[in-house]
Length: 354
Image (tube, rainbow, N blue to C red; front, side, top):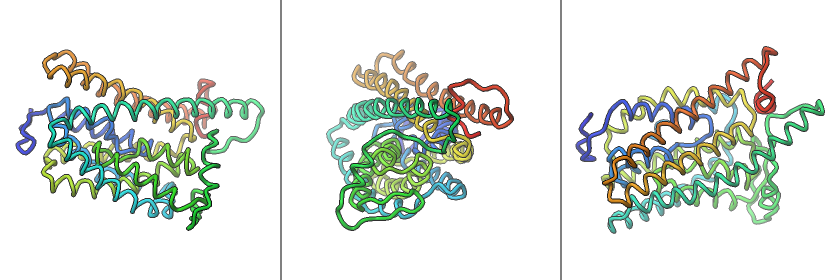
């Protein structure tokens, strides 16, 4: 156990490093900071809600930078889209931090954070899972017909609607091959920035689906572009939380030490799978994190006196991270076997690059 004096709690170093490493793999793969998993975990580890948000936001900024550099090498970043979102992201983060401070002063920051996490994550899980399954079935049909499979396929009709909004100025995002109103991209930045500042997350768990299902970017481009935003939102959010006294730098150091290695693995893994595979992992991470947050919410509402609830919450948090990492590594293994012409499950073939 390590004594984190600024946060005023004791927590195991190993768990913080492990959480940083596993969330680094998942975050680099699906383009999220992982705060929707980490912030609730820190609350269970004993950190106050506002301190958990600040610590996670600061660690996200460092991890996001590493992932961004790797995705830049892979060509997964649309800089026009990313820089257009920056202003909206900064505004949203500021509003989110101020809202968190308001609930902190009321003494209910932890409960509000968990309730908001549950509602948002479960809603995103439902939509992402339904759409991804449709895309998977469509890939199966194309493969059975012997047709060439592209790197991306999604079946949502929402991008056509948002791309038809003729509100100047119109932005041409060449890497993403998208033409859309600048205000659509800015609005995505504001909403996700607010969640980033309030929940202490990078905002990627909603920004990636928004870029795919609203703006119309491919999943790979959405992942890389979102990580650029995470650097900005994470950096600004870390500064604001530091000013408010919400950051214990020792906890941040331990988490980043694991995240730097994990982020490299997750980013490289995206080169071996198609878009729906990334969205599957994103949706599974959302539902698992939702279950974990529900348990933590019950634990907090019962006055943190029912110890087995705390144990289950911690087990769910660590279990979901291990499961997601194993799922990603399994996809890599099957992609390697597929390239060699070896047997892989039929449901995997449309998801991995051949």
